[in-house]
Structure formats: C-alpha cells, structure tokens
Length: 107
Image 1 (cartoon, rainbow, N blue to C red):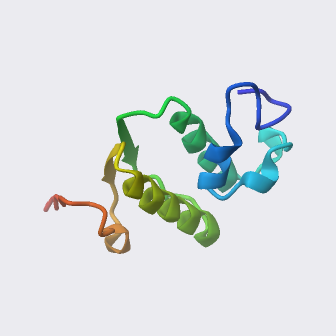
Image 2: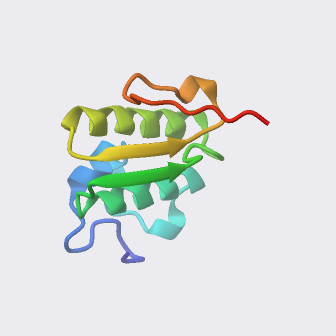
C-alpha cells in the first residue's frame, strides 16, 4: 500500500466508503489511528472481491466507533451475497443475524 495516500492506483474509494473512511482518502496510512488502519487493511482485502473472508477477533482493540464501522461493513457485505464470512469472536453481542451458523466452544 502506498505510504503517502490511501487511494493508490487500483484501490477504489468504494472500499474505503464501505468501512466508513471515505474522508481519509488523502491521508497517510501512518497518520491514521490504530482502528482506522485496521479498517483500511480490511478494505484493501476487498479490492480482489474474495469469495471468502476469515476474521479472527476483528474488533479486538477497536474503539466503539470503529467497532460499529466494522460491524456495519459486515452487514453490508452480507447483503451483497458474494462473499462468505467466517468470524471468530468471544463477544456475544457480535452474533449478528447474518451468521447462519454459530459454534460455541466450552472449556
């Protein structure tokens, strides 16, 4: 990823809009907050329109605003019905309706 701007050639602003960062297109990656950097990396993964996305505790360390941005993004992604999402989370409040199957591990 280009270190000087978030919109290098081939990186569509649509992906940044999906994660709520459309106003940051001219920002340097290094100047973004931690949560914003994580959202940009997720947006970057969408450029290739993957058939499968696997997330392991994706909201860990995010503040409430960026956590909600991410969950909204998952809802939008689900509505497109083009990508399968597998997500591991310890948070009960992240059992979204878009997830058709849930696995609970007991210790």
